[in-house]
Image (spheres, rainbow, N blue to C red):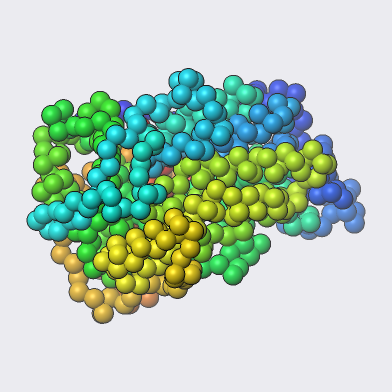
Length: 619
């Protein structure tokens, strides 16, 4: 089987030099990473050309709030100022960047992307509702966008182990109709959007992991630290250590995607989820297959529910026929499942052996694999999207319409709304405050309406299972289409981590071995994702308490990390002195499932060095 071509990551030591070259005459200040930046009376950044390295500490007198030891513990970093700093070159971040430049070409905007190139870490279905792109770039059809496969046919199936039943399209709520939508590689769409952003003057820097937030003295978000690399495995600076740079902005937009490491900090610090239901998640896994031309039907969209998950967990599949005899084959497992013996990856592999799917793939060739968590909490779990100094965009907040399996249109709309709110604020002389108009636009506009119509489908499924979700959830979507709901707004209850039950209450699930034709082991699949991490860096998967995996998770939950991870990162290895918890961080595809599903909430996903991770082609 052929593997996808993987482009090598750019050489890391040149990234900061490239950033310097491209900003030209933009002021660069050298300062110690004290952890906070002074803001003026209107929360404007007041760190202009101030050098506060350790040698300047004694000169600052009472103005210095950090002790000498605090400053000396942190590296000296260069800092650069922009009007808006955007973390993440996904559909949300790039939409915000483009819209800002449309509103005012003089606004300085930088987009920081942790992947080796734009699109390298993008994984989505994807059937794109173009409503967001229509608003952002109305002429995209004439601009060479890689959006060329319109949906021509919708099919819905309920699967049993040996057969399937097709659900008539007329029985599906209107919002499930994909007429007017397009089958796309979202990674390629983002690559194209990045080109358009750069044509407008946006500075886009891939290979720049954002590892820290720079806090203003008044507590607002003032910027981010990007591009640090070269630490030894123990965290000490290595021979080629680069401390990274502080990118300071009047506003900072976080478009990191699901369970972003900086977004988590901001949500917690500003209590943005207070009064909301716990966020819910699913694990989406996807493969690209080249199939027999006789079985290919360009523009066909297929969704299934039922087998193999049945009573063990919620979820479903998608099969999208794009061009060139290729199909996207995907599987989503809701992470609120109770049985710690469930293996989402093996459920996906088993799904491909269903007669309907196996016949489609027979004689074909798999060319790519990837996995990524998706947000499923919807309306009830949507946090406040604006905070002092910035905004949460797209899936960083959770804007996926679960039954439609679509969130990219809402991500684009959120970027547009955030850009318009920031432009309005800066035009009025405001900086670093809370963009209340953005949060209102999200909740009261098209995004909120889209999420509110389907708000009960997920909790119905979680409480009463597949049959109820089909009947009652479908009925609720129909009534919401008419403008009302008989159910009000149902809650989610437990988080996905809390939903995991002790192993003693469940039977172990026996999965068939992969045949190497339709189904594959995890490590083979990881090799089809282009994943690579420099091994001489610190492990980016942190344990709050290293004893918990063996002392608690293993006896109580049979340590589910070794099963829920779709990349085989976590293992329990038997040693002479007892079991040992092993983290193979080099395999990590950045799906974030461990950060979500660990029942003890002991695993913290952080960013590795920029450019590391998967290198997805055409995902």
